Length: 281
Ligand SMILES: [Zn+2]
Image 1 (cartoon, helix red, strand yellow):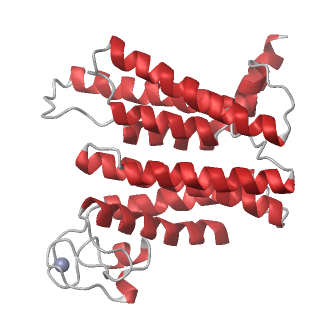
Image 2 (tube, rainbow, N blue to C red):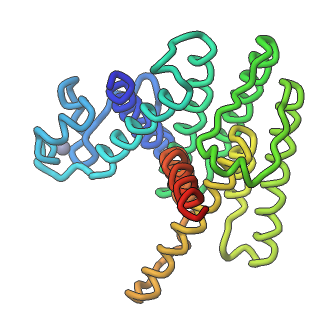
């Protein structure tokens, strides 16, 4: 529960960073304002979700609607923070190594979230965040190497039975990740060339590179499958309702949604597949 609440506040931070990145505003000095009337918000107007609910989704000053995006972002971040704390065993066993794993997965997941919110508004992948993600990965790789540990945590353990995954040491881990990242980026680049850049933007290649750097192969597979599934359903919806889209739809949010689902449903999918296999035999 503590992790969920902590996550809600992180969600508030995610909103803030995405908002200010899009508008090129100052991070540290700028205070939070209402979108419509620009009035500075007070601390009790900044409590995640609760402020939104109490104010009925409206600004206390100008009575204009506050975008539903903000509490939704907070809720998603809260859920992710809790799930990552659970999967990295931080909840059951609070120690330095689990804490490192927790931060490792939390930071990249939230960076992905900020990237997708930015993509949603601007249709661009912010390169600064990509460099930051690579830099943070390097730092973690050095720390893992120093401590002789590596995050062998699968959000989708069920898929491992389908893929051959040898036991790794730290050096292998670092090279494997770089290898995955390049393979994934390359395969997306091939799709980009084959579809003549219509389906996928060049920025999405960077997203897949980062995904490959941080996550295990099974999780990347699950995230990619979910991304294809969600964007497929979305395209179908567009076709059925014959909605005209003015601009190309950014893929970033779909990739993040895919990552979200792969983190959240991995265990359930594993049980589901296991149960089906048991029923069959
Ligand atoms: Zn206002």
